Amino acid sequence: MDLLKNIKESAKKNKKRIVLPEGTEERTLKAANKVLSESIAEIILIGNPDEINNLAKQHNLEHINKATIIDPLNHEKKNTYIDLMVEIRKKKGLTKEDAGKLIEDPLFLATLMIKNGDADGEVAGARNATGDVLRPAFQYVKTAKGISVVSGAFIMILKNTKFGDDGLMVFADCAVHPNPTDKELAEIAVATAKTTKAIAGIEPRVAMLSFSTKGSAKHEMVDKVVNATKYAKEMMPELQIDGELQADAAIIDTIGKKKAPNSEIAGKANVLVFPTLETGNIAYKLVQRMADAQAIGPVLQGMAAPINDLSRGCSVSDIVNLIAITVTQTTGN
Ligand code: ACO
Image 1 (cartoon, protein in one colour):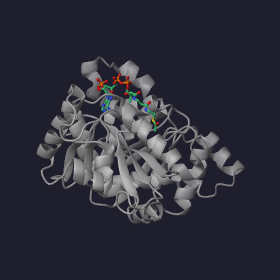
Image 2 (cartoon, rainbow, N blue to C red):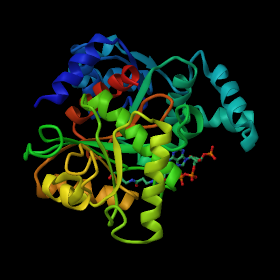
Image 3 (tube, protein in one colour):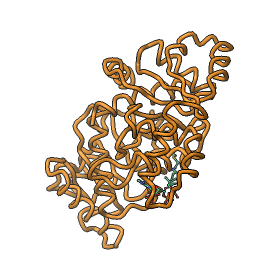
């Protein structure tokens, strides 16, 4: 299965502008060069132009001259962005002076470029921690219509093809929102179903996971998942979703039939929605390591425009892949 190859091919057909706020970071610059050489996206690099050009020369990155370079300290739209920041955050007490300082931070500048329609998506995180990448995005790009929480999905490619669709599954939330309410969990389920269709290219069959299957245990944590399932159906009536289900009932046909005989999802799920971030994060890492699965992500979902966060240990090809995924998100939703 060459999902990433398909994602790159699809990105090439849609010329989208991806802003990279860590333009002076070596792996990011190498990834930008590769993206430009393969025409996967148009690239906007934020950083000191001399530093970027010198690094490009030093590493023979001959395609960097096709990128647009924005100096965070000195560019023509600085005042436009400052005004936009104050307009968006004046209720939070943001002054023009504070905005003037923040806009020099590439992570803020990138989100303002998106908000102002000057870029379509962002990839960052090779140098900065998750919270620092996400906070400006939450504040200025904000969530998509009908969604109040951002979450992170992983596309899991399993060696054992009897799970999901030929081994392809999507897990969420594994990256962002520590303890969602029932309504937030419903939003995470809906957003994950959309990611599954847009990025993994499969029809979602969503299992809302718990330590209980169809009333086998009684607890407020079970109630949360039952309510979330109900709210998700209200939000998206056509969604194939069921819960609460234990993990084995969700993915093993014989167990699904035994524990939830009337469920159309039990035993057949290709999307697993976890009740909390700790369960989702632990589960994806265990499956990745113990089953030697490929984990692509986190793909951030629920944002008004796609912004994705890299792990600081990422490789050049991780960055290239995430840029291609980000382009696909701009067109797939
Ligand atoms: N979705 C949308 N908006 C959000 C979310 C969310 N999930 N979380 C916070 N916000 C908004 C808030 O409403 C607030 O907006 P406002 O300023 O307009 O009022 C703003 O973002 C800042 O909110 P805080 O609560 O101050 O957010 P904080 O900075 O404390 O935390 C963060 C946000 C960093 C995402 C936090 O939830 C976090 O650390 N999550 C875990 C991330 C993590 O460590 N993941 C695991 C590692 S990743 C991996 O293993 C792949």
